[in-house]
Image (cartoon, rainbow, N blue to C red; front, side, top):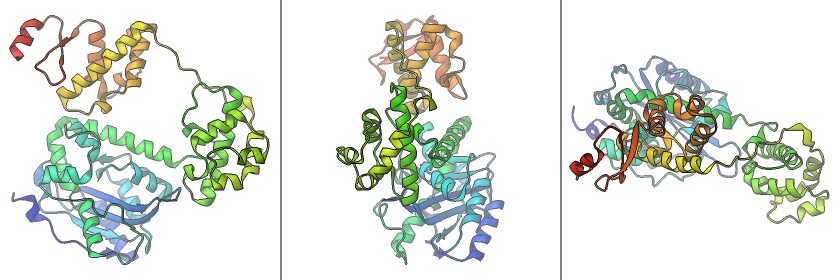
Length: 424
């Protein structure tokens, strides 16, 4: 195969009629791989305005054995104008496809879930794939394309007004590039990952589920997304529930971001103070203009709070000294395993995961960890068993000045002193 850059074709135009949409949707259904990207406007909106849909698909390709050869011939690319035509058939075709590729897709998936009511559990996110392939956590699209394909993509037009019409040739070229190279990036990463491709698919499904959950917030569930709730008493929590519900309704009514109506911190402050008059609410520091204008509604929301409506959240439990020590060392093991495997540490386990694992063993024994995140899915083989083996003494964490991490995880039976000398 020649240089990938030689196979890249010219930018396509903008599709804006129903017949074109129907033809694209039909082609997607028959394609072995599809890829997409979205351009939208989110400023001053609760739900972003969808401004452009970029689609690429392969007409041929052995996806049961991904290989860089999949990029020849290059994909078919179409740019579709959702401001001029209903793109629902394309969105539904993407949602139904078993191999739909996107990069850093969380916001795109949330928008599609909100606007079209679709979920995409079969999505494969190339940013997630890169994190499993040792190319860095949360790498940008341009950086990934340049690294893998030898391109020179930039992001100069990233913050443009995509609702403007007509779009300039430069804008069309930029939008084209954001989707044209996704099949080749997928193929390169899939070849590197091998069996780890299943791990990337599993984590991409988590991204998709989180995006759908974020899109399905209702006034009744809005309080679950307010930060800083832990430790609140029943009366304060009940007020948070009512205030979050009020904010969600107003944001939907006005199509404004949550923070432009009432910040989380102000919800907590108002719930704690529970002012009874509109004047007192208007005088609260940091209130937005919208909230001041609707101070009477806020007062009614606070008055409607019923402490028995929601059970108080469990208070954070303090860990024993040995569990705290274990937690720190489990985190060190995460970094060692990340260095050894090339998998981003964030995907292996978080600090909260390590602390929960240590506390569970401390309080209830080793069998108590079987249902924890570190012992589920692919993580069990990669990090969960290493944690457990270290806690049982089967593995030991030893210092090693010659290793990048400064420590190694080795079997207890090994001659660790000899190993360290050899590595130097």
